[in-house]
Image (cartoon, rainbow, N blue to C red; front, side):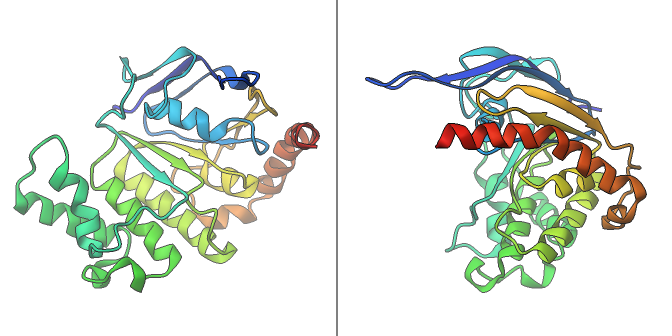
Length: 265
């Protein structure tokens, strides 16, 4: 199974003319096994999103390297990597179906129209939006627009899915339901997943493994193995170990969050 991510001694420092350099994160090293779901949590400003951008190829790190299935990730997003961000990235002038088809139609590789139609129909069914195929984003709720973003990424059949707080703007109930949908899509796609989130509960519910970053410069301070079965659902939040896992993460993260607050004052 493809989708093995390896991050080796990755570090990022921002340089600005006339200002002191800012060491954002690193060095950090970790891996995501094929088909594994890993989350990263940490205090605000610890470099989580910058780390994800370096992993994706959108940003070049100061040092270290990233590889996917043994191939170095350099200055562009590899074709086997899909990304979903917190912000709604739908094109407002395109229908739901056309938004989902966009990458297939205008990507580097030619995909026949019939194959595009079938894959879009499959993606619409996966995210429960078949009856909204001809709607426009303005006619959808926030949660539905996030499902469009997820479908547009999954239709490309990525081996690695990178998620930067995709549900942060949603209400708690919708966020919980979207998490359950994400787990189902993860099982169907067999993709490896790396999720950035501020929510300890979300990280514990969704993940096989949770990594905790320190205050800036972000370093990896802790690793939690949840031990959940692959066919888990939101009911896992009632498991006796769920609260214990969340508390264990908070025990590590609390001091880091306080340190991050002091930096901002």
